[in-house]
Image (cartoon, rainbow, N blue to C red; front, top):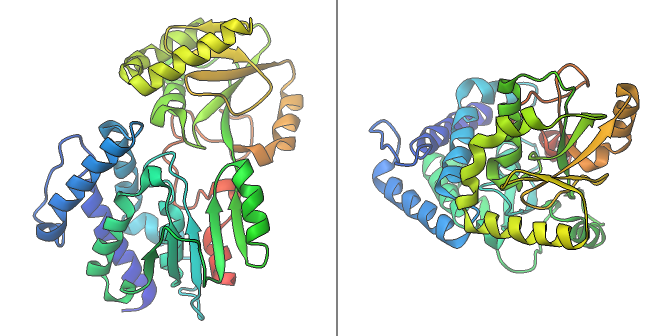
Length: 353
């Protein structure tokens, strides 16, 4: 079997494995390969991930695994990989430096490096260190050609040919200097925005609530800012997002809400809030947890120009019929395999190094 067919088959088996854990109570399937060895072990890793990181709730872990189980299927994998001649004729060692803001946040880089046939040297965030090493072992059982290609390290990276690194704006400056002699993708802070017109239905606004609150707003695809028409009435918005009020049951979220509210009030900022979300007028894109920035506009053409000018700070634009490449309301956390972070085609990069 050639590499492309084999890796698609392997990743499809992985998708079937992950699907078992896409509900709060895992559902073991007799058709999934190597379940006798790996099912209970991964269940334990999920428990450890939840205990280690308070943001990785069971609900958010299940949600992340469900999204991956849905795209790791034959049809989406073939659609993703058909345009490419795989694997790279001269495999290299690719260093992956992963963030830890949401579960398996670096998984797309991981499978991109695998499908292109490279060796992987992975440095994980301590916030998300339990799941991927276990899944890497599962993959080596599924496909002998992967054995020996994946290495995890906590040490300083050395002996690699290219790097994909994700971090804050501050760490990105360090990465750019440190990795200047290697082919690289260096990812910085990005946030996502939504453009409202005032004519959105309740269903559309409920979708926007998912874009805002999923993963507590910690993802780069999480909406952290709204653009609204001048004199926009937020009543319909607050009514639509109310279903998310149990988010305050999370002590970490509630603590952030209380802290940021105190800071804003002491600074005498004007706030609109509903007991679990604060809206603050602000031109910046990266809002703190439990806060959503907003900015009003009078002219859509001017707004489009602003968004284009600030595109290096924006991951997704949620809108309806306003901008090219916009993302539908309620779908920011359902990216396709071809939805590359920062708009940089990772597979293309990895095939050219």
